[in-house]
Image (cartoon, rainbow over all chains, first blue to last red; front, side, top):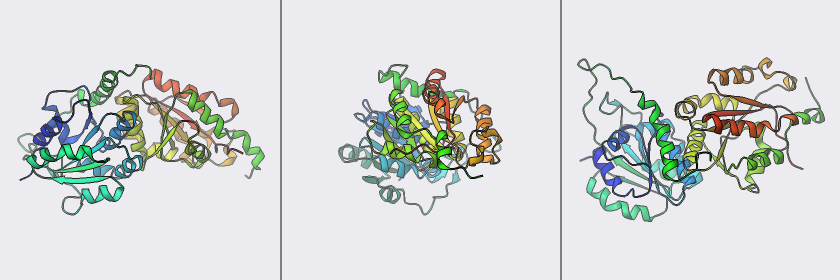
Length: 202
Length: 182
């Protein structure tokens, strides 16, 4: 049975300590349901941008781990980001791919181009990541993370994620994006800077 | 129109002069999809004598995103791309530079500029690739400075500090090939 995004995020959050977390897509919604943390940034609305936003953070903050909670559809938009990360080879970079094989999960549940054929673990290893893993079970994930974090990075941790039924339809034909959707990424990046004690002018 | 190399050199800023300006700005990372006009600068930076690390990305979107992450983590970065690469990265520029207010220092090469346009207004280039860059930056409300001759060398630092002061993108437009070192 597949993990839910909330289950996966709850497990990951137990390991975050002073580490930095970049979220996007379904993982962002799940992390938003957990207590807020000043070292979390949601990559939104910028589908595909999480991997390299996390790369920059990992390079600038080499003593902290960076957890990128990516989506399968978002990674597919910038699949070359796997190569960019592997080239830079940050040893503190852990790339979780929340793979539910659909886009707009819980809204419209459209199939991704990778739904039936693409192997993200193989893609990551072929790109040059140090390690890649796949989990579809909460207990196995929870039991494995300590060991994964002890090994070389960058690493991909694919999570086979379940999804909810879509809510958009005749009864609810639309949802409006809030203003905060367009401002939170900048606010959260500045919050990370201030939490890290970086002077404003740097 | 064909110009001899000695005539063209007045439009070329030497790579060492350029790198020294980046060092004065405190830049530690150049994030890039490399630019053909700036091969000499890329080669200079790859020699790792300036304390600046080059991070090569596979798309210009990724270069923008990586630079934003570096900023959040406290490291100064420059983004080196071509004009067509900047065009490809507009949504990342919108998201991180404009909506999020992250300082982003772009160094944009005018790929494809005809030599007969050197010393002339790049907006009068016969090539759309070249002439659309400045109007596009103005549409995006991104300030820019030209690097056309040695007299423009101070524009490197002006563009960088503009990005910091306005908390958003600013661009240095490189009009011709960067000069190779002897």
